[in-house]
Image 1: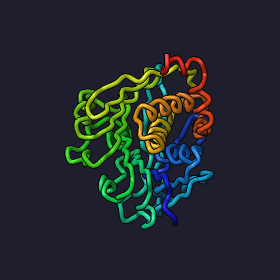
Image 2: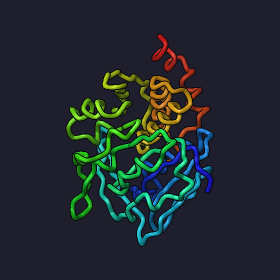
Image 3: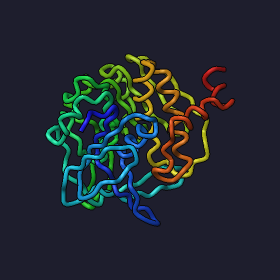
Image 4: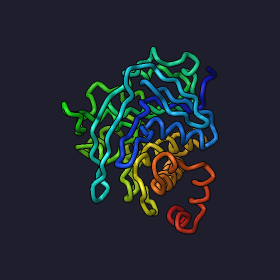
Length: 279
C-alpha cells in the first residue's frame, strides 16, 4: 500500500436514522472530503464491514461488530445520540507500515476508539485531531454524554486541534488548548468559528445556508482545514475554505453533502462570501 497524502483514522459508523441505516463517522466524512479535493486518501477503521468510498483506500481491522449510532435531532439542531455497538479499538499496530509516510493525518474518533499514541507514528505529517470522540462517554444503555479530555492527552504533539462548541462542556478549555497546540479551531455551526493562532483568538464569519442535514459538517470542516493549510501554509486560507466547505455540507443529506474542491471555490467566489472576507 503506497502512502496516502491524506489519512483519516477512526471508525466508520452505521447510523440508524428514522428511515434507514446509512454510513457516517468523522473519519469517513474526512476521507471522502480529501478524495473529492483531489488527493490520494485513505481510511483506517475497524469492524465487520466498511463502506466503499470512491477514491478512498480503506483498511479495516476485522472485528465482530461495526460501530453503530442512533441519532435524533431536536428543535434547534441539538443532536441526541445512542451508541448501539462498537467495533474494536484502533492501535498503531493496526496501521499499514507504508501509511506512516502520509502527509496529512486526521485523528477522528467517534467513541474513544483511536489510541492517542498515533500522534507519534507519522514523522512527515501535519497531524490534526478532531476531538469529538475523545469527549464522549456513554451509559449502560448507550446514551452519549460529554466528558473532559483525558489529562494525559498528548496535545503538545498536535499541529491542529478542532472541536465543536457542542461537544465541549467547559468552553474555557479552548484557550488552554491553544497554549499547547499551534492552531486550534472551535466550530460554532451557523455562528461560524473561532480560530486560535499561537494562543491569539480570531472570529471566523460564515454566510448561513439552509440546513438540510448538519451531520458531518464539522468533519468536512476539519479535513478541508488540513488540506488547505497543507497547500498554502496559511491558517487564514485554511479556515476560510473550511468554513465554506462546512456550509456546503449541510445542504444535502449524509455523505452526499461532502463537497468537491471546485464547489467550495465557487461558493467562495460568490458576492456574499467574497464580501465577508474581502469587504
